[in-house]
Length: 102
Image 1 (cartoon, helix red, strand yellow):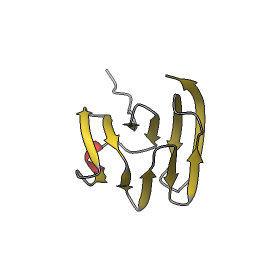
Image 2 (image 1 turned 180 degrees about the vertical axis):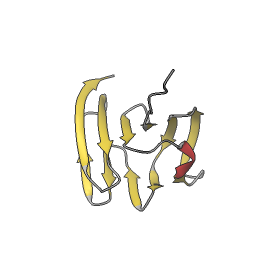
Image 3 (image 1 turned 60 degrees about the horizontal axis):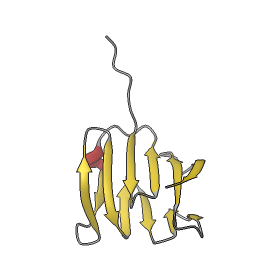
Image 4 (image 1 turned 60 degrees about the vertical axis):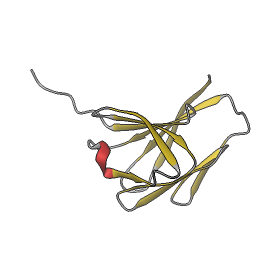
């Protein structure tokens, strides 16, 4: 049986679901435990709550209440109950997937 690789997904504040493309290790994501609480972790997922900065490879991901910044790309929403799916690539590209209500 062949294992299909699964990219790491960050689930942040039950709002942001960020797939880190071509990443397969959750321990490659760095964050300050004073800013983020680790809710749960498995091989391909990190569930976090909080606000502040995360580091992935040479990239920074900054989480605020209604926006998330990947390097210099800002993704924001004015709706608190919106769930946003994003795809971040190692080369710095960002793709936005479907958004839905909680």
